[in-house]
Image 1 (cartoon, helix red, strand yellow):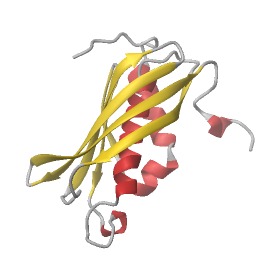
Image 2 (cartoon, rainbow, N blue to C red):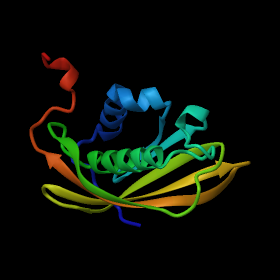
Image 3 (cartoon, rainbow, N blue to C red):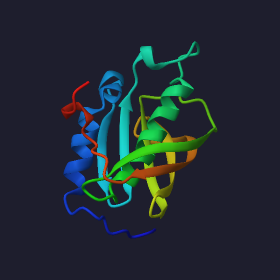
Image 4 (cartoon, one colour):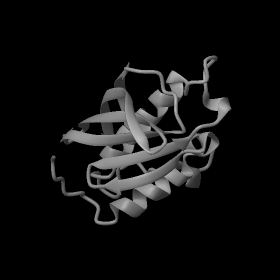
Length: 155
């Protein structure tokens, strides 16, 4: 496992505050359940509205959690004046996401000056047993000097 040193000693507070401002995560009912340097974990309980026609979590929901876990894993290493934006991600859906909740775990593979390579695994939990249903590889961009809090700016 890689050990990274965040550029901002208050990284965890900053990541949690950013996540709290992300209206889409709130709309879905997702929770940021873990933050460490270069890592982020997001959990989402099952709700029928998040599913496709067979009752599995929708692939778009699985991808959203993977994308956000990757983004916040990268963001945890960035300086206080920087923000993060997804450049691209590839998602491999490996099994139907049928269970009580989803958990996406993002991990930085390589932090660069501008681009971060990050991976995430998404598991579904049923009766406290985890099953991997997807894996993602993402590239995140450090937006140097750009505030993460756009809500404080005028629209």
